Length: 482
Image (cartoon, rainbow, N blue to C red; front, side, top):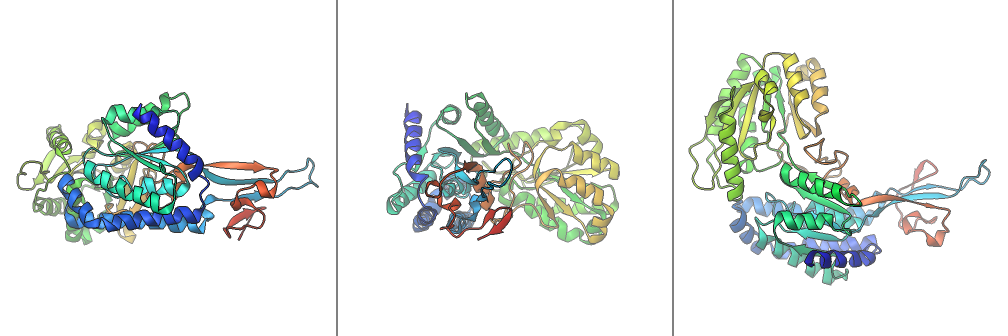
């Protein structure tokens, strides 16, 4: 009954919130950011105690969270994101063409699941919530059990912003409870129109299955699993061995491997330069001190998964750090061959933690075969000089089919929040590779195109009126004008 009441309130609030002006919603988002900033010290203290994440990391994550809110405020205040398209009437045509106008409109109440590894930026007031509110959708947040106090404090900041901004009382709601049962009930509720999720493949796939079982299926935008393959091309390896070893050791172990973009699989062609790189990378990883993981469940899963990987035929341990203490991860580098990986699909699965597998390929053909055997990814990285990119253009083309973000000579960790960013990719990286969960395009997940045919001007939304009262860019009779 609690979930039904929550969704009924969310639907009622949507009937008001959908008609708020872009300027009012922008002010609302900016007010949420201000309320979070006002609680910064207390939020960091609580999140640090709940997640084991360093204070400096949490401080930066709050800044990212408030910046996301402000970015979406800027986007909707300008307004062109609604993609207004106008094809004016052509009575002289045979048959006559009616006046047809189209724009993006919010879908309704959506459910957002908080992420364990980002208590701010991908949780209660994170990018999913910010983009949904910007679109005009109401939000029900399922708080993550790994940081319940943090989630409730952020929700308190949102409720203060609702009051200060004059938004409907239940524009945003917060629920807790058993993950499986509560999650299923939220997704299956007939008033839910969309779902956002960041987490494990098992969790995201379960939500996707629930959505498919509904009488009226709904989209689930789940970011789930990625090993972010990095290909080290020969000339770069030979000329930058030491630098690359340090850079990628840092990327593999960043946050104790608890980012969705940590490089979990490294690939290269058999050579002396590759062996030198593996040795130096192993030394750099062995020097990284173990640190506490987010919570007991993640630590246990990593420890078990690491042992399983290292016991797999064809896999050998290159190096590992000093033994970990309780709740700590064990930074590790292993190696195998392209042939072994092609015959054992388990080696291509994500291991969430500071572990990476170096795959030594016998030749270019085997490298391409390995790449083609991989699942969809969030990122893939090219490490190469101009000579490499010219010589291996066909391999790079294969890489580009794997992921939503293709990177040249940068580690994949670190996701810039900007208009051009794609944080998504083919399944199982996400459930819908057409969308991103980071950047301003994330707003497109919570809208649908609606066409208005033969409406009088006074009946149209402002974005489609003849005088263009919002002053936005529009496509009018195939010309972009303002």
